[in-house]
Length: 163
Image (cartoon, rainbow, N blue to C red; front, side, top):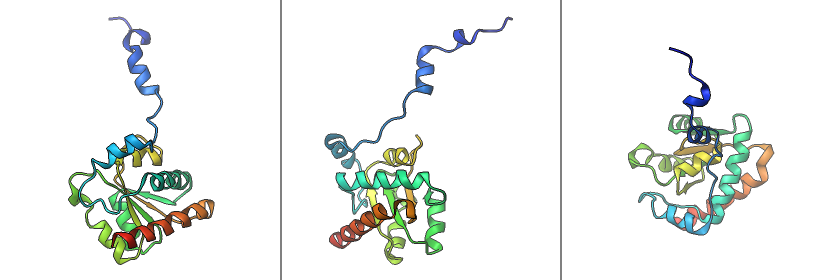
């Protein structure tokens, strides 16, 4: 029983899988349209391609800050209970729907703008990790306040049009 050489145990494909580039966010027309076809029935208001691009940009900026972004049902519900101001971003392709179907009602009750993005995988990538994310809460911050205000205003108009 001798020691194995590291080169013998790991093949090239395993190395490329672990060190490979992360999948990139996509807002190309064909791919975005394909993702929109996979959303569940309650995913309204669904972000347009242009709005999704702005939301992804806002998420990236918020993720780089400290305590400006909350991710996951438990953390987002906690922020909503505390009456924090912010924007709620939900993934549209979550199954089962019951996991987060109550969140839009809470957001409407507390007058928090919310929007659905077609893919939970894309939402996770926007935060900066490969794990899919179904729900994100973005708090306002001075670092990205202008973009935040622009997206929040667009979401308020989007909610009025949907009603």
